[in-house]
Length: 134
Image 1 (cartoon, rainbow, N blue to C red):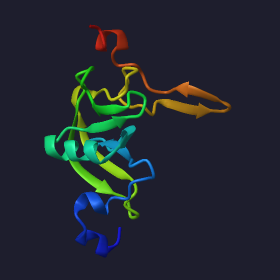
Image 2: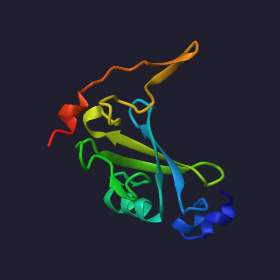
Image 3: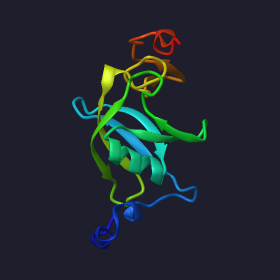
């Protein structure tokens, strides 16, 4: 983002892709660990700023998705940054309950390449059946 972009309204200064989306990385503010990647559109970013909780655009559901709406594992947003090009967001978050992934793990980035195989490197903290029991 150049200094000139700072003169634009904040939503217009963000570089949206052809579908009106921007990648968003959620990083735990305390540990620095990347816990999630998702997409945002203008409405989800506005709602995130308005509420202070992460709201993403779910491409599979084709709707706004308030992180934690089903699991209770909300993300309190402490800061939002863009990269130098303004085409990626970094959310500094407090992960409520310590679980960001629908698999019951702290982070969605739990598979590690070991040799020629992806191996789960992080433990399941809570069984997803218990998280999503209705």
